[in-house]
Amino acid sequence: MHPRGSLRRNNFSFWGLVIPFVVVIILSARSYFANVSSAAADPKESYTKTGILTVTSEYKRPIIIATIRGYLNEDGCTTQRQDNDSTGAIATVTLLSENEPDDDGTLYQFGTAKRRLGMKTNWETNFHLNIRPPSTFEQGDLCFVVYWRVEYVDYESSISDFPSSTSSFRGSPTFHRAWDWTDFDPSTDGANADWLVRRSHELKWVSSAHYEGDILNDGTRSCPSTLRERDYNIVFIGDSQPFYMCQHLKWELESSRNVRCVQIKQTLGNETTFQAYANELKNATENVVIFNPSGLWEAAYGSIDKFRDNFQRLLDQIPSGRKHHQSFFFAPTTAVHPIVYENLTNDDRKWSMTQARVREINTIAKQLVLDETKRRVGDTITLRVLPTPIDALSLNAEDDPKTPGDMRHFGNATNEMLLEAILCDLD
Image (cartoon, rainbow, N blue to C red; front, top):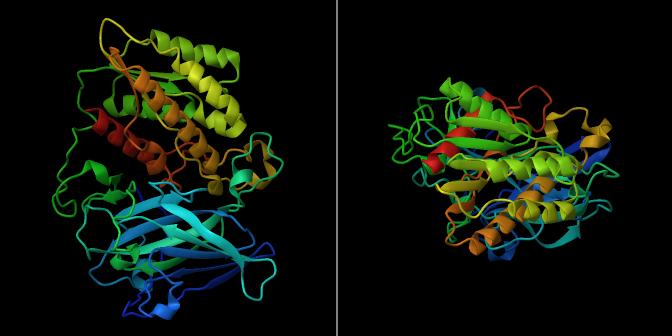
């Protein structure tokens, strides 16, 4: 699997000095400015703190997307090395900023937005990047490049139901700079993040949570092979992306034995669609049932409030007991990447298909599943959220669309990576 986009590095020294990085780009008559602050030894410069992204744009509460990539620190993080080695990144994570921080918040705005000095139309906002480097590596093994862009104008418009009156997506420009290990604020543990890492002898991303030992040397695998025969059968029930992922598993196994793929289209608000999902969930006989009830359709054309009610109705259709044990897993909706769809500005039917809406739908569904799980203690049929964070892992897959311009489906490399992570957790 090829690396996620092109990166550049800058070689910065952190000897108690703060070197602000400012970029000015004019795009479609809009001006954006951004800088990131690093650790400051001077107490007078208390506004510059480790782990802070300071973004200036014309929006007071923008939603930003940030990607952090790690490179081996053998020769330092130089701009030249980045330009000449686009495949050099061996760790990566992508985050969408949150509207309100919670206990597990990773990237969120804090404080009050301020007018940028001398600018009447630009706001300066601070984002806290509360994340720690992947535990797979020892301190100092990697240097990092952090790059980010304004993704949506604000939270409210980014989660508006279809039909949306305006596209709040921006998706550009991108700013980047090099970070040292200590820029992740070593005084705090930081939030857990779903890093992807790559073994030195493979151009292939994998979930860092599914490897043990030194992946740079021996690549010790903690999961069985995706291709092995399993002693349980499995069904995927969902819209297009879960179906494509399931079909990829059949292709990998070169067999349809023990694997069944069910594709259902339209939102749950469509009664025919709802009944199709209900029938599949009630009648499935497989040991493992993985379901995602039209998450992509709901993001594009659904109502968030109606989804909440319909999803609970659907959970009520799952039986509480059978003669044999079954495990039902809700699979989060995978990420969408509007930035790859060049005609988005003119296609108002896709304006509501935002990553912010995908996350909102996943948050609602996960909470309802957790609540339902508590009520089902003792049932022979278990219900859980799929432990694999496929929503977070697929957020890294911006550059692997199924076809050019496809903002919601992924290519073989990403489907294989997601399947390996899912099957690792199931096995």
